[in-house]
Image (cartoon, rainbow, N blue to C red; front, side, top):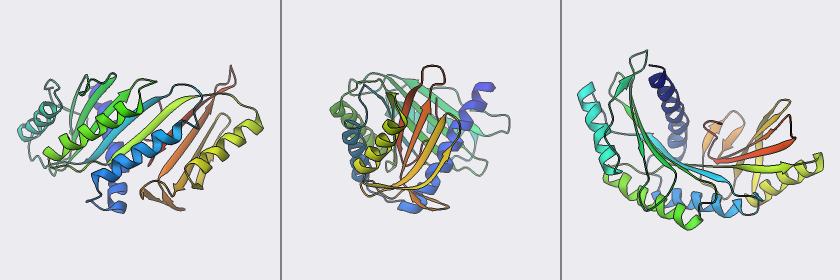
Length: 252
C-alpha cells in the first residue's frame, strides 16, 4: 500500500505539472518540437557541467479513458507491450485511485531504467508517464535515438510526446563569485531571463523563460520553461546542479 501511495504521488504530480504545460502549449504540440527541446538541453549541458551528468527523459500527458478496473488494466498492458515490458498488476492507493507501474530495460540498446506509470481517476480519465533514467555519461546520440523511438511508440498508442528533460550532476566547490558566474553562464547558454526564485540556507531554485525552449507553464510571474536548482552539501561545500525543462518535477 505504501508503494501504491508513493506511485500515485509521483504520477499525480506529473499529471498536474503537464496539464498546465499542455494547456499553455496546445494539445497538438509537435513531437519534433519536443525532441528539439531535448537536443537543446543536451547541447547546452556541455558548457554547464564539468563532469558526467545523469539524464531523465520523461513523457507525461493524458491517455485513453478507462471506466473500470478491467479497462484500466488493459490500458496498462497495452503500454507495457508497446515498450517491451512485462505486464504488471494494477493497484489502488488509499483513496481508491488506480495506479499501474512497470519497469525494465529500455529499447534501442540503451542502459539505465525504463519505467511506465498510469494513473486513473474515478471519472475514467488517465495520465501516462514514460520515463527513462539514463546513467551518467550516456551519449547524446543514444539519448536522442531513444527519444525518437519513444515518440514513434507513443504515436502508435495515439499519444503526442510531451517531454520533460532533467539533467543532474555535480558542480564542484564554488565560491560566491564562482556561483554567480555559473548562474550567469546558465542564463547566457539558454538565452533565459529569471522569472522567480526560491532559496534557503543550502538550496536555490530559479525559474526562467528561455528563448531556446518551447513555451512551458504559466506561473504567477509569467511563462516558465526552464528551472535550475543548486544544492550545497553542508559537509563538503560542493554543489549539485539540476537543470530541467519545463519544470523540476522531483528531486532525489
